[in-house]
Length: 100
Length: 410
Image (cartoon, rainbow over all chains, first blue to last red; front, side):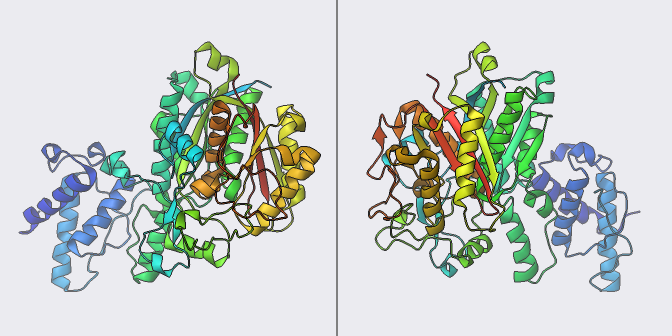
């Protein structure tokens, strides 16, 4: 399930991964696994931080498993959509927690 | 106990990035101290520091660079240089026993300062996720271990201004007693944040700016000394058993003879003549040498009123009537006080002084303090005066006194 904004969300997160993690754009398919792209649990915390800046979001600190690029895009896309629907700064019901 | 050779030197320092440049700057008396240019420097009474010409992006790819505070960048680059100098490729079995021994006084204080600026200065909760990993004191040692796959002891000592002398001494102990066959040891410090500088300023330990020339602001043992000037950088050495170094044909920079360690257990900041003298005596005992064998000394020599008086008295106590004939160099006037990296940089300068046979100068000692009446090599480097055997002194807030004893190769 994707929203109408999905492609735009994918583009912006793709740009972050290429810029901050030096991910090869050619490997960034939606089913690419994050740990194989060099984004480990610590990197995930950093990616989420940068995504929050990019999208003006604040994701609550609740555990959710995101394994692939596509799952990250979908998660953020839903958060953006939820934010718009609620027109509130902290709309999403779930967030991301990384391994310690 | 086994003899221990120094086979590698790695430097990131205010005086340069390799042993030849650093020694030449020290010999010629070219100070690395200057006006500091950071945001908020105008809020400092005397905005002075000895900084390093260093751009981390030239040494690290972006994914790793983001994880490294400046203190870890210095440490990793200095380690690369020390290991390249030592020329010792290790087998997998050797790496399992190879140790990293680091000193740092303030760890990743720049990252901590940045985080607090966000939190308190900007009233924002957007603390970057890497603040803990960048700020923790053991990050420099950890990154050296990670980069080289060294899986033996990986230890960080934080005993303020003696941290890296302690690190080198503790590494020496393990190599000498046979617990390990190779170690990299030294210190790293990147303390030049506004928060850190203001804290040091509040303690009234920092030098006022010399009216004629900021580079002349740190004046150890001088009557008009007014305190220390902070510096940044890293210095690391590779230590290995003497016989191993000979067997592999390594170039040996010098011998680390021994290490003395005492604690004042008195005042938290005021130096103790007893503690300093006992540390020098302990270093002599560990090295198996007599006071009469010591040819020259690299002093702790911070340029504070308290240290320079106490250290002068402690040297007199250990060396008696001969104290006034021993060249005593206070090189912090050149490279500033690198806090947790100071002892390591001064140990390296001592190795180089012995190798070249040159006692390094104590700069800006224009008007001697009548109570500081040793031979401080006040009027320029002295050729032929370093001798064969030296002590390198490091004393610290908290009362940890560490002294390294070293000898020239031949």
